[in-house]
Amino acid sequence: MKLVSVVVPCYNEQEVLPLFYEEITKIAGEMSVQYPELDFEFLFVNDGSKDNTLNILRSLAEKDKRVRYISFSRNFGKESGMFAGLENSKGDFVVVMDADLQHPPSFLPKMYSYVRDGEYDCATTRRVSRKGESKIRSWFARKFYKIMNKISQTEIVDGAQDFRFMTRQMVDSILHMSEYNRFSKGIFSWVGFNVKYIEYENVERPAGTSSWSFWGLFKYSLEGIMAFSTAPLAISSLLGIISCIIAFIMIIVVVIKTLAFGEDVAGFPTLICVIFMMSGLQLFCTGILGQYLSKTYLETKRRPIYIAKETESSYLNKKTQADTPSESNDPPKSDTTEENKL
View 1 (cartoon, rainbow, N blue to C red):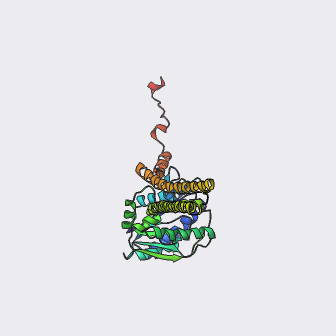
View 2: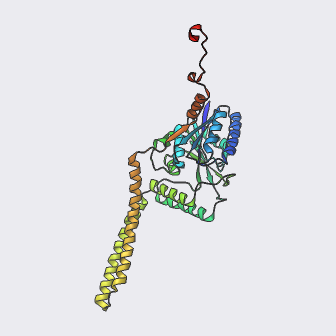
């Protein structure tokens, strides 16, 4: 038998979680018939949800032994959720997918067909359209991939998603990269292996709303650039060189105009413009250095990527103990001996 671990990060997914569970168990049942050697476990990672997500996971774990979950002590982010799921998965194959059904479980049989024979180490999906997204968001997403592939040696395929069907060997390689500042799209590409990309049209959520805002995606893109490229550092150095060249040229022009043509030098406006330009360049370059320094600072702290507060085993054990009456709670037995009566 070969075990397939389905890792599902969750954050405020109470509306769509029952729909996802119904769909994933249906597909798992069909795959078990088609491939009798397969067995499944469903590992949900509750990333500090503020709604009823944890209670739903508790209920699922009680009625289905295949359901496991890890509940964080707070919200650590999706990257931490994926890492926790990969780290705690037991399967020979590991699937990473979202609970919002935008990663269709119906793709799993096709993905497994590419991985089972050993030709590919990973099967993943690639969106060929961004239906349902705003035009501005789609434009920025496409530009991010173009910029990232130009400034980084790690190629990230445009539209590639975290929805992946991976072998245990590839998962172990990803876990060896236990860096604190994580950008999984880059990590998946950096470890290499043979990857099969399956193209499909974008699918909208059947319920609930996405927790990813435009600002959140923008910060996430900066994480990717800082994690897999040192080009911004080179850009800051280049800007410094260019500003020095411009300043030198300006000095020569002012000197020639003054000595050759006798023109007066506009003191105050020129000085203000130069100060603003040089100060802006310095702050920009210092900001780039600060970003890299902050990432290094967080790495050297060696803080854990996540903290687990509860798992399905701890919950079920606690519930079993609560349901089992202890001996100390038994009512005292009545003693009717003559000695005690006296």
